[in-house]
Amino acid sequence: MAIFICGMCGHIEFGTAPDTCPVCMSPREKYAQNDRVFIESEEKSKEAAIKHIPSVTISKECKLIPELSCVDIIVRIGKALHPMEAAHFIRFIDCYVDDVYVSRVTLTPAVYAGACFHLKTKGTTVKIVENCTLHGYWQMEGQI
Ligand SMILES: [Fe+2]
Image 1: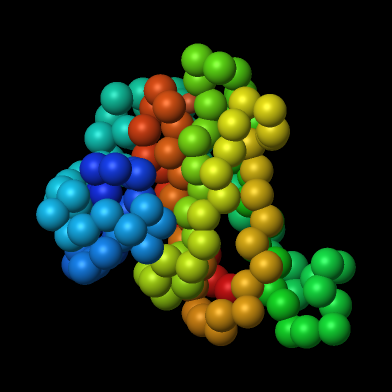
Image 2: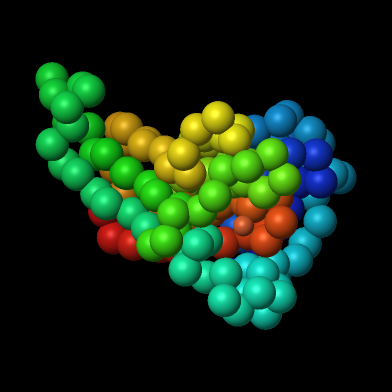
């Protein structure tokens, strides 16, 4: 699938570039196509996968919003937890349902490399994309 990256905020769109970036509102012209962006990260640092591939737990029993049908997408970056230091950290974690962007969590070195998305969107697949300041883009996809 074609991969388009926003040159302003780093957001990725799958399939086609949007008219307006859903994260930073930049126009389509700021997007550049790079279908190999995830492959490039893997090729650059093969040993980095264990600290970068998102690991996802899906919970259908939400403790934050129990009164509504909420699906929790609980994300941790790396089977071996990714470091969060000034010179090397996870900048953001983006969540997609059926390849449509739904939400971003922006991180700083003050927090651990993880996030939780409380989905109200119904769908079949969830995709998580993360960006590391040193090691680029990594993703995972699973069934909801
Ligand atoms: Fe990293």
